[in-house]
Length: 224
Image (cartoon, rainbow, N blue to C red):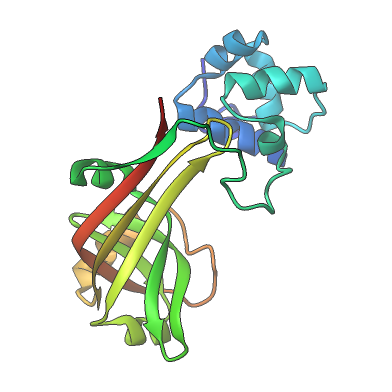
């Protein structure tokens, strides 16, 4: 049977490499089991499990087949593109942007992830990446006390997107609204419980801010 949580649920030691983590993350993103990836790539499910959980040096032809099965590239699986921004792939000739409905925008926001908050500062406009959660109709994120004090009561923009270079597809969603500090103790506890990770930026970022969108729009790249 497939294990969505990797080596932790199999009892195996956590000896995963970056390749194993990326392989498991992409498989889970697609909602595939190890058996399904194995069938698509001509490999045994046990081999897929081994690559996810242990240090391994698979042959390039095996990597190519697995990458194809996952709709990605060997470079993406091995981390060769980590230092490069997404969207480097050549656009298809019949690509175009289409507007998303508000319902589609809310669906794409999902429940959590990493987005960007655009604010005005004393030095001018600035954009900061934040870990966020969707809380009801609002978008919440943690920041420092100083940043929270500056942003409270101001109108900000929040943006999240996803680019798939292998498939040459992508989308973006932008929400605009007023930022407010979350001070109610019960609300803070709920957000702490819903947060899937600590802020990636580290440091003393424990103050929750909420954006209640007054406008939300999005676009998707499609090709015919």
